[in-house]
Length: 88
Ligand SMILES: [Zn+2]
Image 1 (cartoon, protein in one colour):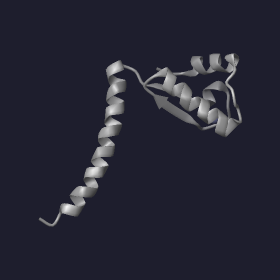
Image 2 (cartoon, rainbow, N blue to C red):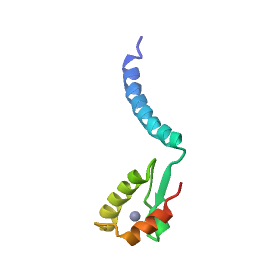
Image 3 (cartoon, rainbow, N blue to C red):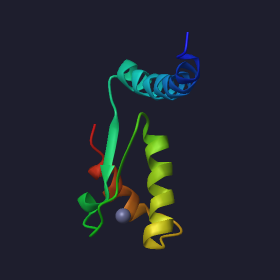
């Protein structure tokens, strides 16, 4: 058939989709997907992120805080704010 190259391309896309699906399936299995929006802690910032676990979410938030807000270390006070702002 003539559709072989196309099949190959869509296979790569499918693989990526399957990988993404696995992550969201894992989240579903745990029953929650955690989300955080920077504006919820009073930042004038459109950043928002999701992760299946709080540890993963905190890692993403820490990276964002560092790159976007020059916050090298998240203080206990800020950590408290963030935890309150995390939506389950
Ligand atoms: Zn931000």
